[in-house]
Length: 326
Image (cartoon, rainbow, N blue to C red; front, side):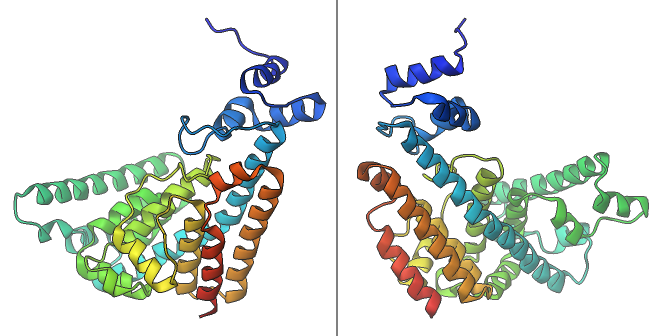
């Protein structure tokens, strides 16, 4: 059985094994606050444990932690806005095409993307299975929320009424919402894409919105659960080439690959501009991001800052400002 280390022994371990200068009551308090296991072990590498950061001083660890927390504070309001807006835009088109708010009717009429595939083909079976799973997940969510006393669900069941699709959108998570969108037929997906002002030349299958939903879902979950985000290790969704090309074309910014947190700022600003957010607010977000980078660079060696923010970061931010101005 491994012997449990005290806070003092952890500090000693960091000095002896990691060659990090950490000493005194101030460092001890800060190590306690953000934790050795959640904090230091989470911030001592970039993307994978094999890519260690060569820290020399505990203050450098604190600088990365502070950067990460500030990034979460910057992104969280934007993510919440976009989650709500995306659901509203999809809901608007769904109701327009269905003429009903009944999920069962919408399921039969609109959530039938599987039909575009050859009958009994692997793609057909996969899409149909996803459609069936979606229905089960939504019913499961409604059952769970009824049992936990969620008012928006209990209200309809106690009134002997079905839960309308708009209420379902209130209780499903971003992942379930993304699967809902994927199951919609291409006609509805296309109208959503147009209403979001996405570049239709790059959205041939009308699934660019889906990629956006799942990308925001990954970032949202990381922020909500206080996971590390500065090195985009949260990225799970497969990012469509068409989305990257659309962003690079529309924003006149090269090298967008979402291997850096800077690219997620580009995406958030891009979407908010499409949705009519004032330029002043978008500029404010960019200025805050730039300020975070400047503060971080002052507190860590250049070798560390260059690992976190790639050499083309400044070029991207200059181009981003130009895009906002258009």
